[in-house]
Length: 390
Image (cartoon, rainbow, N blue to C red):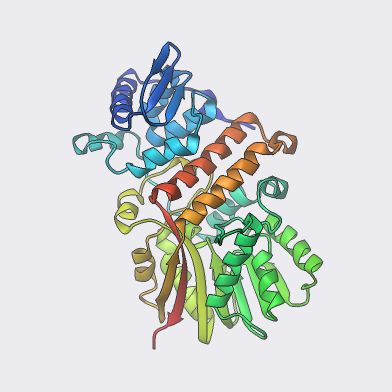
């Protein structure tokens, strides 16, 4: 695998000097324990180990938070408890840099490419979900569900994933004879559980690898006659459905296309039908402040993605007959889900699947970074029920 931005350390003496001062301020404010090659600066907070401080400060100074992630990928720094360190940072993200220094963001903040066209969406999904079905199987549970679980006391991850799916199907009132559209197939577990209720399911995806395995899993479960899995963008869907269900897909749509997404739901929903969505969200003010910023996650993990606020989604559906009829938040369940995924990923032999050490560090950082977002409350996850206005 080629990693040109990891192998090359950018250089700017001025920006590195500014980054060093900002880091010292943040470390003092959070009381971080900072380990340097020449010793440890004590603190009561999580420890950060700067193995190559020079490279770290140059990457931070030139590329900001993207540089932080790339520096971790390169091995410039480490942390004995990476999620704890990132949670401390996420909890204070909006106040870490003092207002008088916020202008520094213009050095490194790049605008997010907002292209949610069908061609771009296919390429974005291919970048992440078509990496390898074996890779995802290495850290997901046997339901192959790649979204937040919903835990009850005593649940395994598998139990909690099925609980999440069943609650969505209950919200959409899926039962015998229901015509169900699933937007974003994943690897087929929701379609299987809907079919087990006696529903007929049309599931659409733009991931070739996911579709292939989902078809196999549906057939193995005995529901090939009641579940169709099609390679199709949501805008290409046709028909009329009693229930539409979509799990953590709206985040990949792109802000400019949210109205198109909800107009599509409105067009496809039969009279009296219901829509159940699961979505990762962030507070509206944070979304407005960050929506034009190109991030490490967008560069390396989810190109084209943007987390919406509930307010933004409501505005996007305001031109349709759909209205938000109920919602449930469970962000700490996502933090727990991500912790379990990360532990499984760290124990997996991903190198045997063709992925190198930099990829391993990239995904370790991604899973810990995401866990920190939910642990700190910086982001959340919700199940949303949409109905037509009376």
